[in-house]
Amino acid sequence: MSLRGAAIAGLVVATIGIYVVRAGGAPVPIVPPAVVLMVVAAVLLAAFRTRTWPAVVAVVVAVAEAAGVLLTGSLGNLGFAEPLLGAGTALRVIGVLVVLLTGTLLVVRPVRPDPAPRTGKVAS
Image 1 (cartoon, rainbow, N blue to C red):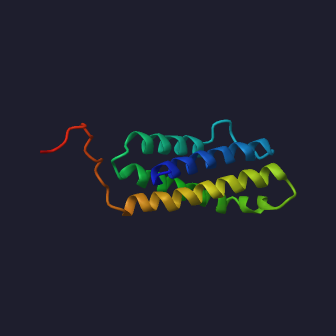
Image 2 (tube, rainbow, N blue to C red; image 1 turned 180 degrees about the vertical axis):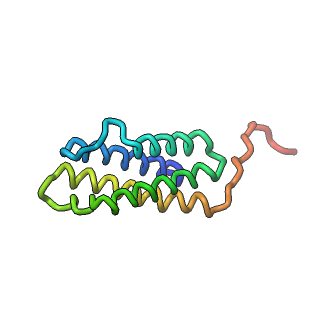
Image 3 (cartoon, rainbow, N blue to C red; image 1 turned 120 degrees about the vertical axis):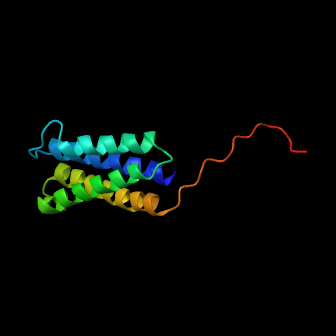
């Protein structure tokens, strides 16, 4: 899996985590703003494969989600009292960490152009 694919997967996992937390009884809107931001970031990463700025957007969204998890005290859900809350929070944290790591690597590494397509002709 490429770094870009891993970042997209991390965004999807974190999004699923939000809905698992909601299923566990947390007061989460049907369409939370974080979900919209993560889906948009994932679409941008998929659509603009040769650009660096979508990775920057993904990292900023992941930092915002990490701040949300930390500032709301959601890390306390990782205990065993409420299994869905704990599982959802774990998914959010894992997804965000994956996006932070892979997104940062996408931003700092040089962009390599796609190799020339092979035509099947032999150079003479």
